Length: 79
Image (cartoon, rainbow, N blue to C red; front, side):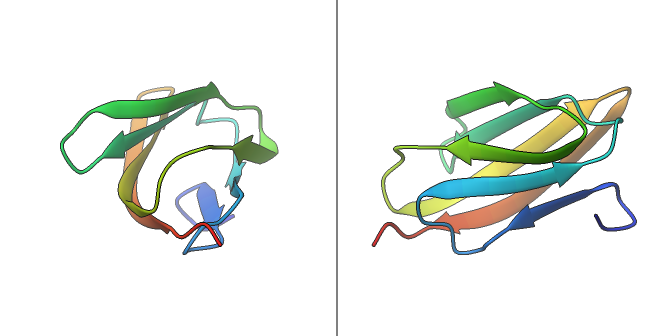
């Protein structure tokens, strides 16, 4: 977990998105580059493996909760 309290790997992503969070983050949201939410999951502290069926492309991941929000870009590259 980085200083910010979260980590997302691998990037690029294939089958699942591994999200490590501290207790400050409770919600995972994934958006396409048009701003449409394409995936949402509740998070628990520690490791969360999020299985997806998203097509290849770039996405924005937003982690939120307890008055904190972080956004990062990831690439989906299904093999």
